Image (cartoon, rainbow, N blue to C red; front, side, top):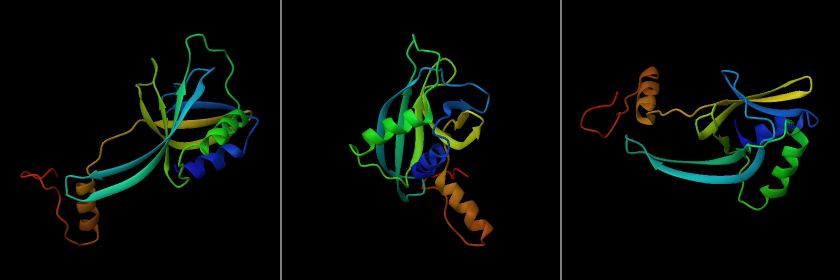
Length: 159
């Protein structure tokens, strides 16, 4: 999900409690804090020898051991976001990620799959990152389009 899509989805229900959850029903503990807003510009070379570039917006959450039992409201989250977003070169077209870790969530930067609103709750569904092979994906797409494209630069093809 892009940063602008995420913010727009949150703005639809500012008075709701904001809950971050995974597909297994685990939730980030009540009383979490929005501790950091990061931007990242990634420049990579994949195994097919192609250069790739993309931007990400990363929101870091943290739940203290002595956290209160209330979930942050969407309005409070957006207020914090708005206060700090001008301090870093934020790109609203960048993918949004949530960085978090605890006993239920392996420390990582999670993808935001979607945002839902149900009564007084806004739920953000998080998905763990996965590795991919861009060169293989290009080759498969090319095969589907009846075009030729090489896979990897490796001696033994990865695909």
